[in-house]
Length: 107
Image (cartoon, rainbow, N blue to C red):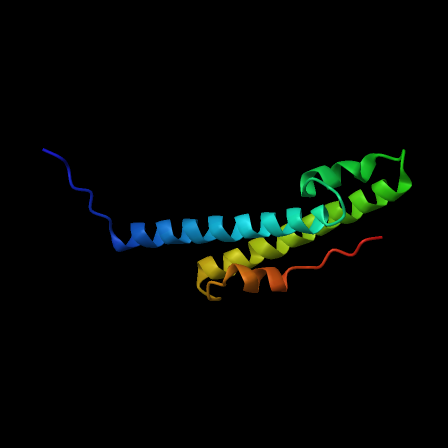
């Protein structure tokens, strides 16, 4: 005989919060990757790897700008998620969160 799994309201709320966090962080990651791809980089990670490479000063400056932007974006994103988790802010759509994020300024 199969067992029946009963979820409490707290468990459902935790699962929904985790799903929201995952959905929004994936959207932010996609946003950063797409933004730097417009400049020819594979993704935000590879763009940031140029930050310490002095061989081509233009790439190094872009890498440093990307690394700084990435940090500011995640700092903002996690602050929003903490506010959502605490109940002091409503859950946002992906588009609303992206619109609030810091903007990358290329050197």
